[in-house]
Image (cartoon, rainbow, N blue to C red; front, side, top):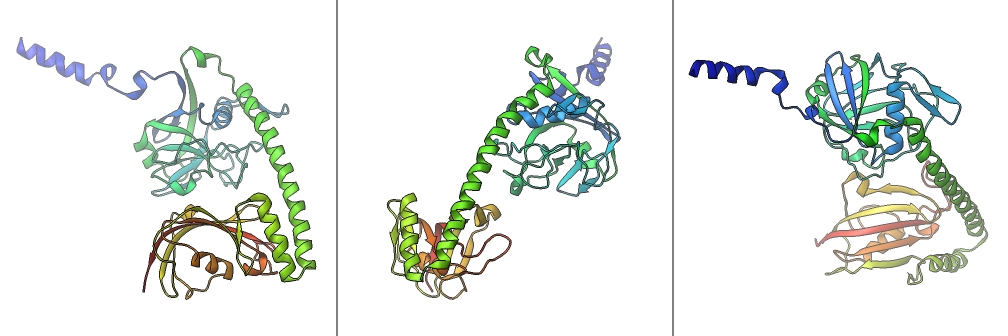
Length: 363
């Protein structure tokens, strides 16, 4: 009897029917079975976080997607496509039928990168060539890649098959991608409808943003004309008035630097030679960001008034204390002057530096 029980138990444990896999009972949602020549990868698609991106992926995978009422995908787009780019301990990339890295399905669509989902190990994310240039190419991460957060849209997470992801080499093939619709709400999921719904909304938003950018460019052109036609003292007054319209509590120094303290600090102000550690965001007064230590996750460390930095930045740091958060508004003549610094800083650029002073260490 004991021998029979042992045999039955061994059979029970060995039988695949009784194996415990995440795919045995999946919660309601959309899932992708990526069948490669190295094995299968099961991915949960995050339609609640990136609805347009998921709809695009589902439509391409199934060969059933219409974009802009004119571009029609009628065959499974990914079947037989290779992983054309594989970087060890980084990611595997596929989705380009040309295997060159330059292929796309004939259209581009918007980012959904600010969705709160980060690039950790085993996420599915969109490859792109810059903002709002998504097409068909995607990648799966081997490791955490935080520098991609906010720049690439994460739209899925690997549930099973990370060992397959780790084994994939350049040139390996996606034989098929099968979409699983689990639960009643997803049985009638229509990729074209879901894609169009979000695309149309975002198109209106982007059109509005482009209009605002056009207005900003016009304002900046007028500001540059003022800068070219005024003396430094005249521009100092003009600049302060301009900033006061945006920041009523702004203070201007004798040099023309304008600042707003966002959070008070403690301790002494830095003296020449003191070691200063700070984070910063650098933006144009009428324009976008040109640099940020936050993006690199690495503070700027320098010897105050020893390291060569622009005058307005030095003056603003001199006003600060450890723990302080302060915004500095630099007129062009306290920044890079009349000369452009391509590609990010045009001529006569007024700059904003938002500083977070981490530490000031005396000599």
